[in-house]
Length: 629
Image 1 (cartoon, rainbow, N blue to C red):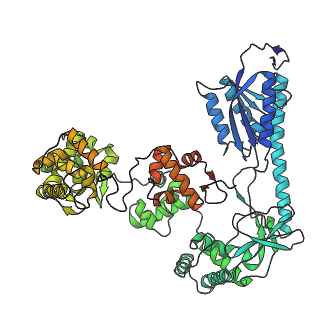
Image 2: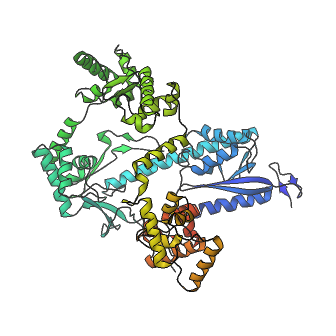
Image 3: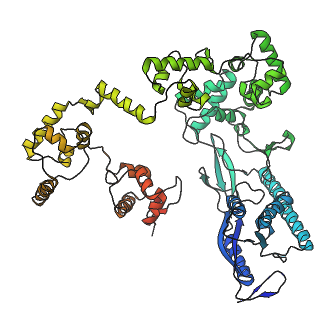
């Protein structure tokens, strides 16, 4: 076997193969064979030049304009810079697959990082391959510029084509506002069907237009305009009235405040389709276009009178909040300071002619910086403030020492119940933990075991351990119930105690007396040896009188004492009965453990589904089921 390097000199067959990772990218889900073609071309190049592909990184349906969303490329760069790494070269079909970055230096930067770490980047479909000669660098840079220019030209062509289609009255985009529907038509504008949310046209010759929706939704739109324009009802109150009337939006939920404002400002209500309100190209931030660039096309008869619609726009513009800049914020803070004599976050949020504290922080970085800009010095406040009371650090230490002297310990429960101290949350936030605050206050700190031991003593002194499912069981009552079982069945066992339905569980007996053997001895019952217990148990099993372990009450979930194949067999049967499987169905099936237990057993539900041959079904929500024949 021979291989050829970038200069065309053949290498001996005995040389070790170079470990390589291949990177594949396609910019659209419709390119079904793009990654396959790339992979085949890379495989041919690798076979000729002595590369062994050991890893694949695939970005399917991802644009090459930036690194955003390209998780595979991010992982590839991370693995290339890591030590140790599994490959020494990266194989890419061409420069455009590496990326169509608008700044060609960005693509060169990522390649430089790989080469600096000792990983070469090879373009299998380019004439220069892995050559690093100066002329190759120039050609590669031109290729990067051409790749970015191709994206810019394509973006401009698509924007122009979409605007031309909008001028013809065809919808450009997916969702429509409440009260309207998307109608699929053919090239002659003959209607085909109403598109549901998420559906798209299947043929290039078909088009989409917007039509009015059901009459009940149109009546809701007219009611919104009548309430807002004629009766001067606020948007928030309109939302409340519609919710009380049971009006549902497109998603099945109640109409929200943004949805109502969108209805009031949407020109579809006067039968006019508007396009090109904003522009977003090449993954840049969305920008608002001036009104002279908008495209307006009459689509159907108005839903509301145009005069009423214009009046609504005037009211919306009048109710729009002013955009606060730094100068206006400072003026409003100075006015508030002159009125109140002091400033605080609460006062700022309550004032009508002052922006919210969040807006001030967004503009200045912090309230302290805004205060400094107007020459206001905030008074020093102790770090612990709660219920209008402020305490210093020394006051907290004194309170902790007094609490210890009174109770003999310091716990979260005692701190929260102490009126002389703030909540334990404040103390832990300032000192890091309650134990650290206790140490700084020179108070003995109890370890976790001692705290639990004292808690158990308090529970026992209060009689909490004598209750089982709300019923109080004294030691005498427990021993009497044990003697009753012995007299009725002639023996006592853990399964019998669990399943008889009268006594507490066997675990409760062990918790109270230490073991079942000690409980039998205290009940003055004969104590059997282990061999005697085993022989009598086998005898009951042979006679068919043994009691198996089961749930103690109807709604009790079974413990995960299954073999893996039993769980998988149950999942398969559940999917065959229902046609699909989900976590809810697993939780409702009494013969299976909970879905959380299945996750702990197999790692995740999808892995368990795949182990029994279940596949992902089409549609939303995501579900798994038996593959269709």
